[in-house]
Length: 511
View 1 (cartoon, rainbow, N blue to C red):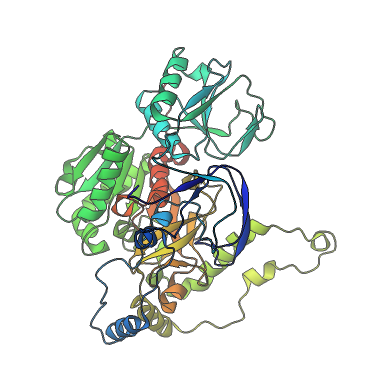
View 2: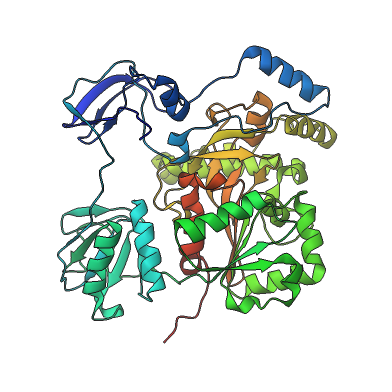
């Protein structure tokens, strides 16, 4: 704990004037028993600020010199990321308070260890695990390694008096070995995860457990591209994440031998970022390798492109993804804006009964028409090039998530994402956009992001999923597990790998 004094609330309490890193407005909230409280009035205050401060600001003098350097074409003066926040990296609910809350507390000497439990250890129907907890991810991976049949809920449910979110894991007794109860008890004890036995499939709310709203997950057989042209930072974080953090087996495929590799062994292929941009992957694969990649995806593979690999797959010359690089679709920007507006309206569905019964005009026409004349293509190119000059350089940005999409399971309505790139991605139906950067007014959570960059990246895609015949392509704009400590966006990569083959591909179920 680095010698930092940490207290824990012994009761539920209310506090006023607090702020979180998503909403700058003061809030009045009620927080539960067990909330951690870190007083600033202690000797390690500088260390606390370095670890927990939401949004440290750069001096105006530096901003002026940085902008001058960019405009003169001499490049950025930044050699590192411009934001660092443990709270945002871990996607933790946290609040800054102007005063100490009035509540009984006790000091924590060491971190409490969460213990697991199996409630109703010998159920008639099966077991349920809430996927919102990170410990549930470890449970899922252990179950898949052991050959258990695991399903995931597509909708929230309430059963036997408890509520469970989307993504909740289900093990049906009739689909698994008769010895499952002893394995479940060992799983709970070893990982500290809560597991609930259920005696009935009949839900009080949401789909019944025996229905088709519980997707059977397919164990991933993972390969990750590596080699001299691959960014060691990107590959290294993926390697550390899978091998060290989650201890899940995967194969390293050297890109120099890609042409001779038998891809039939794998159902998940991860392309990390590369040095030199998207053209590097074009040089790696050549035409024959690209055809091999397309055939593998078409046959049911899950292809995951990260960072510059996503830019390669979205490049119009690659011909794989329907997601497009913004600089290549400038003449179609109005179409993408309308698509975003339509998506946003899905969160606030309204029914105009007069339009239905009387035929009056609806707001739908506002989506389909655009009276404002767009600039000509040369002007759009100039604006885009100018905005790219001010790209995000390691800023933490707000990503709004589609909570109904399986790529977002285990997360809430938004997640902080670190971003250091000049690629912006445009998506519309039939591409499923599970996460978009927020609008310009709220996109920046921490770090340096110029107003030009806010305008260019607002509402652009962060994570997308699209079908490709029997398979699927998933693009993640940035590094989701940046330096192996961004656990929030890391969950998106985990979902891509471990939920993807079951939710997003057409696979043959063994019999």
